Image (tube, rainbow, N blue to C red; front, side, top):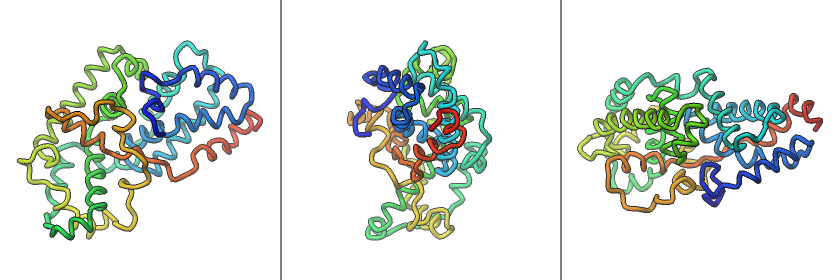
Length: 292
């Protein structure tokens, strides 16, 4: 995933390539099936990760989605692009699955931000800050991922699709099976809720707020919430989300909304530690279904 054209939501994405792979996979090509899963797995995984905030759960969700997708391939009629069909199925699965990961730990914005404020501040010297750089980044990503969990599921998935993955209103509406106008309204409400709370409480977007990740890091490390030797969020990635979803990412940030958005666009586009493709293709149901 080194090009923005690899982003299934980008206008230049090769949808015809998907159709050919589907046809070959249905005819029994294991290679085509592997390529189809490999092609879309990073985005299914990262969408799942943004919905639950925990990589093990995101890996489980990714496998569940692809088992469902692959066993339904023969019902795909190419009346819409494969990516639209796949992501509609993905979104429905994520919205209906049980709450898990960080979802069960976060209640609402007020409770979440109050809990962060209760963590003692401890200043770091310049040298300590340099030494703890990766842990500070770990906390930043962990904390802002928790903010996403404060949104309800429909708001969260709309925000991730529209704001982070760059899905336009037309495609977003098709994926969520609502009108483009309703997608726009949902996205606007999610932005408003998230931006409002971050403006009030988060030092990343409003320098008047006292909360600073580097001041909280030592306390989070001491409590075990952040383990410098076993990072969870600031690891296993080759790009930031913005690298594949935004052509204007290098432009000057000149609005509060762009500053909030950048906080999340700088999250890693993470790579699953498990061999999702192999595990999906080794699924007993799929092996029987496709005779592989």
